Amino acid sequence: KQEVTQIPAALSVPEGENLVLNCSFTDSAIYNLQWFRQDPGKGLTSLLLIQSSQREQTSGRLNASLDKSSGRSTLYIAASQPGDSATYLCAVKAAGGGADGLTFGKGTHLIIQP
Amino acid sequence: GAGVSQSPSNKVTEKGKDVELRCDPISGHTALYWYRQSLGQGLEFLIYFQGNSAPDKSGLPSDRFSAERTGGSVSTLTIQRTQQEDSAVYLCASSPHGLASLGTQYFGPGTRLLVL
Image (tube, rainbow over all chains, first blue to last red; front, top):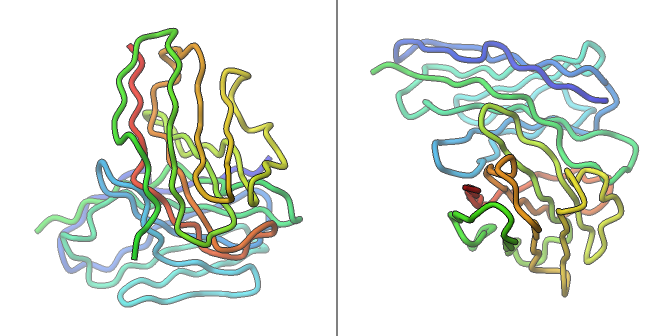
């Protein structure tokens, strides 16, 4: 059974710092990996989707990498801003053409101090 | 453009009552997913629809849970004889891709269910 772990569980840093969020998964047979952010009381917003054949994706100040063989992904946030404060979730889609949904980690709760 | 919508946004019910949660996916999206997010827990996958059919219902927590989708669009998740442990946020997502999905899942805002 696929398990996704996110480290750290919580992180608080001053505005302007670059930071890295970590995600690991136990089964490397995945179709893709997705990073989401979740704001309090809101649904999930997709940030980046990396297909299994890709190594990284970039969007603005965000860069996500994927090392499928080692079961790891990182989300890099450059020049952090208070508006980046949210819970960041990592999720993987299993390969094999099954009907399974995404398997999520428990998230990293990020606070950017102004 | 309209995103995924869910109703009600909040639901408070008494233990033992039935509840029905609704999801309106993005128009044209063939795949629809239900997840549950309990306090202090990660998101848990419940069920997936490709069109109107749900190939695998094994993710549903118990036989009190059922889901259907009609017309390849709206889906309802029904919980019968609710229990306090059913209290959670129920999230719906849709995707333009079907089985062996390679696409992004777009999430609705969720329904917050509280069972007293």
